[in-house]
Each structure stands twice: as C-alpha cells, then as structure tokens.
Amino acid sequence: MINRELLRTKVVQTLYSYHKGNAATHLMAEKELFHNIERTYDLYFQLLQLSVEITNYAAARIENNRNKLRPSHEDLNPNPRFINNRFVKQLTENVQFNEYLTKQKLSWVNYPEIIKGLYDEISENEFYSNYMSAPVSDYAADKDIWRKIYKKIVLESEDVDNAIEEQSIYWVDDVEVVLSFVIKTIKRFEDENGARQPLLPMFKDKEDEEFAQKLLIGTLKNGENYREFIDKNTRNWDLDRIAFMDILIMQVALSEIMDFPTIPVNVTLNEYIEIAKKYSTDKSGTFINGVLDKIVSELKAENKLIKVKTFSDKK
Image 1 (cartoon, rainbow, N blue to C red):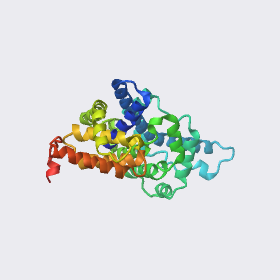
Image 2: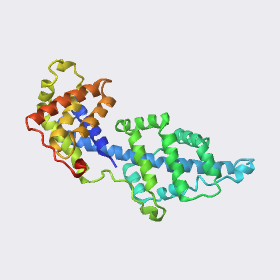
Image 3: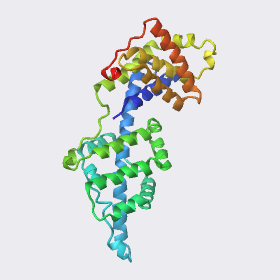
Image 4: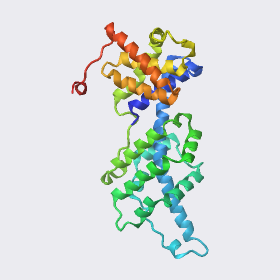
C-alpha cells in the first residue's frame, strides 16, 4: 500500500527528526522510520472505518426517528438503502479489518460530531439523492457511492483533517495519498470474497520495505560525503544560508542515485524536487534540481555513477 513516493517522504521526515535530536542513534532512526510507516498504515484502517461509523450513525438516526413521540410517515417508512449498503456490510464483517482495529485500538468514538457532520453533508449531496432514488440497487452502486463519498466529501473535510492531526502528527501529510488507497480498496472489493476480502498490505512487496531501510541507512552512513558534493557544487552560495531541508533532501536523493542502480536518475530527481516543493521553500525545487544535475554530471564524467538499464528503460 505505502508506495515509494510516500516511503521517500517518510525517510526525509525521519532524517529531519534525527538531525534535530529526536533520535540519538542510527538504530533509533530506523525504528522511528518504521513506526512512522506503521502509523500511516493505521490511518488507512482509520479512514476505512469512517464508512462503518457513518453507516452506524445513519442506522441509529433512523431508529431514533421511528421512536419519536409522533413519528411521521417518512419516519416510520424510511429508505434503508444507505444503511443496507453491501460494501459496508462486507467491510464490517471483514476479518482482517476487525482484527487490525482491535489490535491497534483505532476508533472514531471521540469524534461523534464529525461523524454526524459527514452524514449530514452526504445526505444533502446530489449523488446521494440519485443513489437513494435509483430503481435498482446493486453491489457496484454500493461501492460507487462510497468512492464518491471519500473523494468528494471526506477528502475535502477540514473537520476530518483536524481530527486526524489531533490523533497523530504522522498522519498530517498523508491523508490525500492514503485516501487514494482507500478508494482503490473499495474498487477491488468483490462480493464473492465475503469476510475474507483481502485489504491492501503495508508494503507492496519485500523489495519496497528494503528500499526504505536501505535509503535511510545509506543516507545516515554517507551523509557527510554527500554534503561535500553539495558544498563543492554550491560554492557561490553560503552553505549556512541554504535551507537545512534542501541539504537534507539532496543527501537523500544522492543516496538513492548512488545506491539504487536500477532507478533512473530522472525518476529520482523528479521525486525529490516534488518533496522539496512540499517541505521546503518556493524556490527549493529549482535550486535542488540545478545542484543535483551538476553533481550527477560530475559523477558520470568520473565514472562513479553506475546505472543498470531495465527492460522498461530500453523501450
């Protein structure tokens, strides 16, 4: 689930914490990295859980309306399509989902107003009205309504963002990408899989897990060497005045360039330029691109840079 784009960001975040004194040793930094990654995986389940919580709220609201002193015809004869959503029912029964929530003690119990607010916003939306009034209800429509809810309502909710920030500092910057994984998960659900529907794993494969570890350790071990490269190619700049985050991002980028021969240089440069745009100054992307381009040219001229062409590179 946690792709390399996010893994690169997690490595940069962990190294920033390390250099600011929050991790005293390389081993502690490595533990911090994987704790950070695990918390992002928690967020995946926490966001999936919203669909269950909102549905439970809707069901409780219908029951409360039925029990009014003077219920209306609509109170006594509600449209149950939303609360009978088969995707949500399947997720509610999912073995992996329930085991993980129990183990990690994840819950929205402290945020009832957010659940209520999300349901109110959903029920006022046109796509909800279309779903509720459709002549036929099927499994595909039950999945589609929740993809729309996550994309058009949860993603745009400031209240959800604030609640997530309260629960974990690790989640602040992850919401958008993790929501994309939630939407991907919904799309992959199959009715016939029942409670055994597989959810996304933390890592796509062992190679991605090793990528994160190797990138972190490589930067820690060779960071000073990479800083010398940076110093040499920024002689017209006062190194003390260059943003610390810029230097750190370039060190991580150089670690990837040097230690991962199958990753094309342009892929690496593009990834860290995007990280710089998000985590450093407005001009950092252009600056980092220029410095790294000089270093790469130097390494190539001195035959110190080895890149293995993959099948996709040769096309």
